[in-house]
Length: 136
Image (cartoon, rainbow, N blue to C red):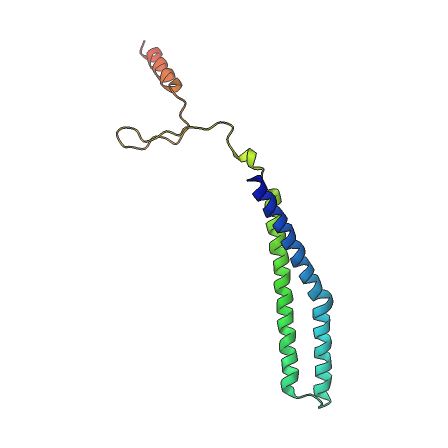
């Protein structure tokens, strides 16, 4: 179980690193290059060297790249949240009970017993002792 958590933590770290690298690539290279292409297409269209369809196609590519950059930023936040949740989870040994507990089962009449932990005959002894004291 611990190996599984270590593997999950390693996967989460790798996912975060990859998502962060992709977002950084979009921010530093893809978006500036796309903006430069849009500026060139705009000036080409203004100078009547480029048809309107190609200029519109360049604008469409720009919007697509901006949306992909936004998706990369979302991936970074998702990976960060996954990593944070894994690192803030309590260790498994703290979740496990120190001793197994026995929960009361249905009694003979078919009705449900309480959801408290069964304490054996100790409760019955205390109840009868109190009843004897009250009645005497």
